[in-house]
Image 1 (cartoon, rainbow, N blue to C red):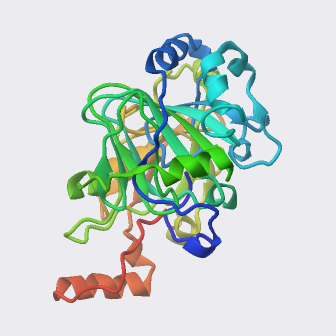
Image 2: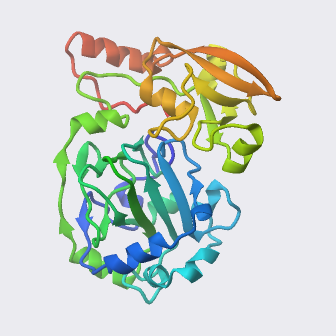
Length: 348
């Protein structure tokens, strides 16, 4: 859910679980009850992800904090969200009496058709000590979970876990993909399930892995992400006369590399278009769209609202190696046919 660089704390020795991609847990999921309860969720209950890597995702928090902020997914003070009282089967899956021995965090991710989640690692310490379990609710043949370049399609009625401390991502097919996801702390029930789990490594999928930000065989380097942002709520968009499904991205901060570049954005700016494009099914925000659609060396024109005033801002995209001596060396080594030491991360 967060950054794409390694976390030194996330070593096999420090984890409570021996995580592996991918493990099918021997537990029966009542797919019909799960789908029926999902279909009854009110439209206004859904929110958007707090993390830019979730380009195409709507989120419903089931169990976590109560602040409405990102730390709801990491806080120790957790409780079921009010909507869980309307979802009895889902509530049973979260309970200590349930098959998994109780969830510490739980949520539903709904991915747009042809959407992606970029390659990233779940590196908060709260996620290192728990096991992440996926239960598909709605899926399609083109939907895959990727881990370190290997892809696995998960079917409705199944429960799977994987190593979320390594780089992983999602590529969706032509229809909506919906997964219920829970984090479970060590307990007798989940440990028994893990002992009897079925290992499936998935299949290598370099094309879709590269699509989500994993480094491909050509050594392609992704554009620099120079700022952070979050989408406006539908209510805020309506107040500004903007499209409900449009970018409308509020800049939250300018990154260190953005400051070095002298990017002419400011915190609180609202980006509404990128080169004239104001929405995309593949992007959560305008900054996501840049990452997905544009290349190093390009110049993009951002249409911005600043204090209610419309203006255009031009940004030249720089690759990671523009700033990193190590990355420049790796680029040179690839150019002359020498293997670079280790796999680089993508710039998040």
